[in-house]
Length: 127
Image (cartoon, rainbow, N blue to C red; front, side):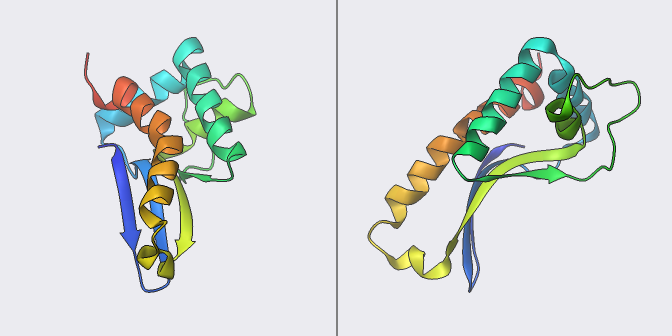
């Protein structure tokens, strides 16, 4: 399931959104949406925007795209190698105690929200 997340460890804060893994039926829907001309293009644009903002996209676990899927370019091929999809960024743990922490977390979640929304619309919600 896609969602917003915050992980706190002694050294770092990780703020993100997305899904760390897909169930088998979700993975099938994800791959079909990535390969779709409109939905795939939308995701590629979202990922590019998140990365231009200086954040990372995670969830890639496969070394090559699955059989039966043709990638129309490196961005599609890259996204087909994922078994989950999430955007995230780290901060030093002491940030959690600063007055600006909440506004920074919200700023990041606003940047990551399109990833979550795309996953909800194309993978999580069943038509």
